[in-house]
Length: 262
Image (cartoon, rainbow, N blue to C red; front, side, top):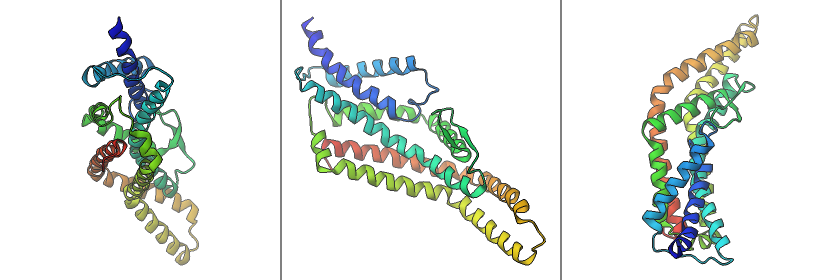
């Protein structure tokens, strides 16, 4: 009984970190995953994490225990948010494309999040999720949150010092900038093709004013955009693999930074 009383606070801390991670991380946080499955998965992963990294550890059970809980929740949310940031790249790229192709007003419901999202962004996001699951990326997510207990043990507290120094904030801002840049690079081929289409329509309007550009231009841009998307999709697989590699490197850097290492 005494061992159970000593072990429960440590187990609860690990469950706080992992539950917060599953709330924010892509795939696991989607509405398509049943809540019972999320709770059960969080419980069993927390139990494994405790057996691997929590045995023999002790944490204070006085008022400072609340600070430990807040710390674990923030760690889980930060790791999950960073992963979600890179997944949102494809939706941002889809928004860029929709504004050019003419789908800007035609939003659809994303079945994974339940929110309204651009047509191309929703298509690319589902494509990314399927590719990610096909390469067992969700296993890397679980492995990453488990490895976080090595970098950030439950009984150490260097996390708040790194937040006070501003290192983690600077890293998140840098990651956001990098994600936005990658989103623009992903959508660049279609944007350039549609821009050249606009230029051609402009010349057509000057040389043949009898044509109704609004009637000709909208279906032409739609056809060009879909054809370019058909050509880009095979190369998109390689780009997304590089994106996943960048994501895992960023998660590793975040864990090092939260620990205080460089």
